Amino acid sequence: YARLGGEIIASQLRDVGIDLEIIPVEWAQWLDQVFTKKDYDLTIVSHTEPNDIDIYSRKDYYFNYDNPAFD
Image 1 (tube, helix red, strand yellow):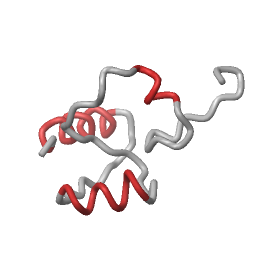
Image 2 (cartoon, rainbow, N blue to C red):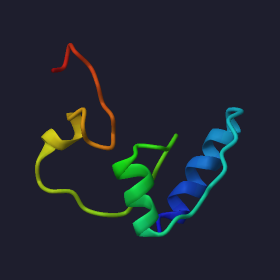
Image 3 (cartoon, one colour):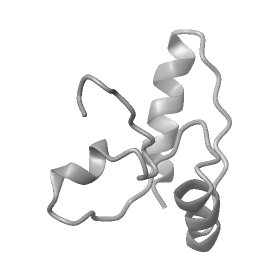
Image 4 (cartoon, helix red, strand yellow):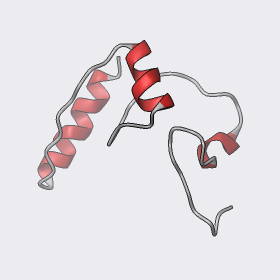
C-alpha cells in the first residue's frame, strides 16, 4: 500500500544523505497513529480526499500545517 512510492522517496533522500526506515502499517494502525494521534515523521497514504482544498491547510488535519500568515 503505497510501498513503491515510499521506496522511491527513500532512494532519492538516500542520495542526499538522509536515511529512512520504511514501516508498512495496516489501515487501522495508520488511522490511529497518523490521523488521530499525529505520531509520525513522514507518511504516504493512497486514498482520496474530499474535493476541498481547504483540508490541507487546517491545523486539526493530520498534515499539521500551521502558518499564521496563511490563516
